[in-house]
Image 1 (cartoon, rainbow, N blue to C red):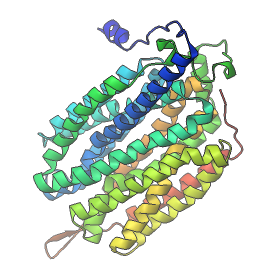
Image 2 (image 1 turned 60 degrees about the vertical axis):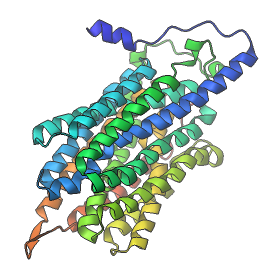
Image 3 (image 1 turned 180 degrees about the vertical axis):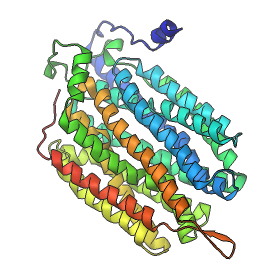
Image 4 (image 1 turned 90 degrees about the vertical axis):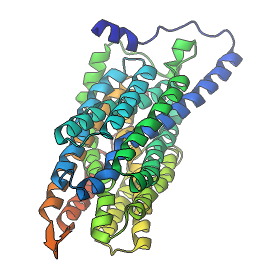
Length: 442
């Protein structure tokens, strides 16, 4: 069985180069566009199946199906599975057929969501959500390896930034459409709708995603500028593990992800319970950060490539400070739709930039392009361990703040709010420690 699975995901052998340069150029352009669309749309819908639980949290708590602490534990199951899955699958993504690999991840995630729409058993729910986290970790490494394999260093940051809008697209779909479904038909249909929509996208991704250029007789990007090292892939990957800069960036990303998923996981709950919005109103406010993030993400790579010669440190510091201010305003500001929406606009813009820089691109810049999946995996495991710890800590802190006033449950978010704000500050400070680290250009 292992041999069968291994053969299925095995890379295809290179083919002879096409006969004419004109044919090569046209075919390369067509496949690059197809791959970009496949990983952008595909990874966007990965998020639809990843965030469905976040929209359902308030309903699950209100209906007494799970306690807030149990909800935090369930959420952490995805993050921890995703964290270690991202490391393991980042190592694998450097070696496998990414077309089959990425499609498999979304397919299993979709099926899990459909099943979750029919269960209320805590341990079964938690285990399934953890399984979802593992297969969610197929998406980002496959996308990044595809970018590195098909796009050269001079355009990589720009393409990465444009691909990064996929998570904003997925978040916007989740916080508007899934929130509408949950509000109208109940939390079970939120999971079912997410799963069914992702099954459809699997067919699109299978059709439009391709393997490495050399499989189709096409030249690799910047082939002449990338001399081969006479060391094994394992040795190259070990070099990445030994890099202090990679680990500093990983821990910076870890704190960044605490605040990122504080808003994604608990933002709706916070707005409903603390500020009195309805589910649809809260979802609409949170969705603004996803929509605004599209701009930040899209232009992040272009900004650093064009104006900072590929260096990400200075713009990372600027947007790190904006990120800190925006979460502070969101948590500490009054219940006012204009103020809350503005804070989410600034949060989304800065998050959109930082998720590209801290979430992987700065680490991939430091590593060689042959080990991009490994670099992303190291950052990923730290990021989602941080996100997982956040979900547990946030759930406990929120649960411990509960009081009963005139027979009604009242939440106090003061302590957990400072936890979220502090994490954004630590992230910004850690990122400054790699200020002088130079990118690796092959």
